[in-house]
Length: 94
Image (cartoon, rainbow, N blue to C red; front, side, top):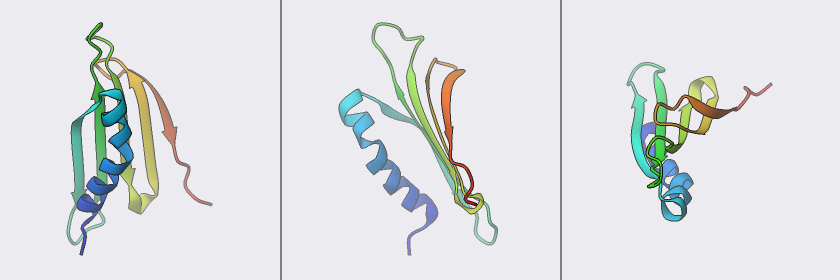
């Protein structure tokens, strides 16, 4: 039986492959939690591209998922401190 962290890691690799293969991104952060006996299920991953010209303006993509609350967030932006970004939040189903 597959765990949520294992399933998320597999889906993440497939979804983010184009960033690695075509745009020179690499995985910087990966966190997936599934606590047995509770409903604590969460995953987050961040991919970063370092531009050789300007190290202060890394581009990044961060995906966060909390399936039991039906939350899916995608942040896209630039900046070493990840302060300038665009967010796509999936609204909860009606």
